[in-house]
Image (cartoon, rainbow, N blue to C red; front, side, top):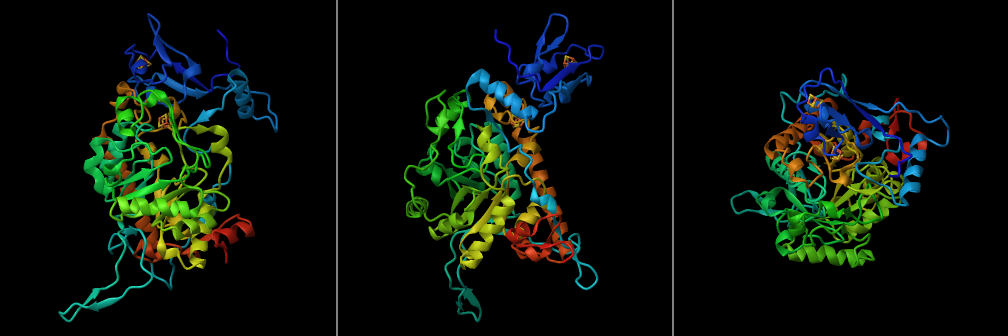
Amino acid sequence: MFKSFVPPEFLAEIDQGKCRKCRRCIQNCGWDVYSWGGDRVLADDTKCVACQRCYLFCPEEAISIKSNPLAFKEHPAWSDDHRKKIYLQAETGGVLLTSMGASTPYPILWDNILIDACQVTNPSIDPLREPMELRTYLGRKPDSLEFEEDGDGGLKLKTDVAPQVKLDTPFIFAPMSYGALSLNAHKSLAMAAKELGIVMNTGEGGLHQDLYPYRDNIIVQCASGRFGVHSEYLNAGVAVEIKIGQGAKPGIGGHLPGEKVGMEVSKTRMIPQGTDALSPAPHHDIYSIEDLRQLIYALKEATDYKPVSVKIAAVHNVAAIASGIVRAGADMVYLDGARGGTGAAPTIIRDHLGIPIEHAVAAVDDRLRQEGIRHMASIIAAGGIRSSADAAKAIALGADVVSLGTAALIAMGCRVCGKCYTGNCSWGITTQRPELTRRLDPEIFAERLYNLITAWSRELKEILGALGINAVESLRGNRERLRGVGLDSLTLDILGIKPAGR
Ligand code: SF4
Ligand code: SF4
């Protein structure tokens, strides 16, 4: 058999002195790294992706996973990564697939932005003693409010307010499809969203029947492939999202490999079992803002005027595109930055296309304000939000809400190994193999998700308190409370923030 020129990335080593030969590692590994050699467990390093499931479930701590120390001769231009990819492509002639967010070391501007705090003349607020409001409403706000007398000496609202999506905290779960994720992972997200008073998003894979009871906490997506889209589905959520693009793979369609399209996925997506689910790069009925407008209103008509979100990848002229989307009637603009995750994408696309979410949020918020239409749509920021601090900075740059994809998967055990597209996730998250999916108990993993969002919400309250404000609404677009460190003047200008010390 042909031997690959690519050396194993990791070495899975078993301390045979400690090993009690229970073979749990063989059961736990979705990548078949381990096998029984008759008298001991053998490891095939070439299959190891460092998902660490074996290490965590070994009762004797007999396993260690290490980076392969085999070094390439150093070269300033020809990195190990470039050489490995060339070997692989010379062997296969194929486009290299990957998962999760971009691994290229572009600067992450969240790490160059600091948040203000109150001192002496402007008092801070203690969130443990005083109420803090995190509630957020997604959707179109009226130009102005009019009131009229209610007949009892009071006033009542006269203005018609468009339907809103109520969130108890400004976090949502990112669109991740059933098919890319296991049903148990989807259930965990839905159960956590319900408990938290927020929403999850179906992604482009339709909605499994088991999730219909969670309809008050779901946004249903309508993507270019229209997988699983029918009237009941469109009405099964609190809002509908038109997916135009995804941060990890702007300009290209979705790809769910046929191995992940089992009976249930096939029924939910309404496609034949075992076929690759390839959604086209464009919507074949959208070639202009006018076309987008027609689809937005068709979806509103089909859903008794539920709010419609339009999700785009952050690209170079994102501000102008977002302006067009809002003018086309969208109630939310979902911006997915270049570090956003994916279940499967060509590595070259994931790592080199798009722009980071920091620039995109600032540019879009600016543009919508300048045009006087900021109130007409909410901004959802996504694509590499790693902590409550990233979230607070995104909100201060102009987002209404931040969306968590990879962070939610990490809460469920994901090790960011980047191999979701293989369908072998040992953690039961991005696989359809029954022996792997059943290890993810929705009750337990919903609780982990609940804990994560609860912790971030508490931290956000701490940040608000330190800023001396008691509602997240007052943080939105409040760039005066941000300062840049080590950023050039042009970047500061784009972000609309001052340098530290000013
Ligand atoms: S799980 Fe640990 S103790 Fe059990 S067979 Fe594997 S290495 Fe040995
Ligand atoms: S979801 Fe699973 S396969 Fe995907 S990166 Fe995480 S651990 Fe790896």
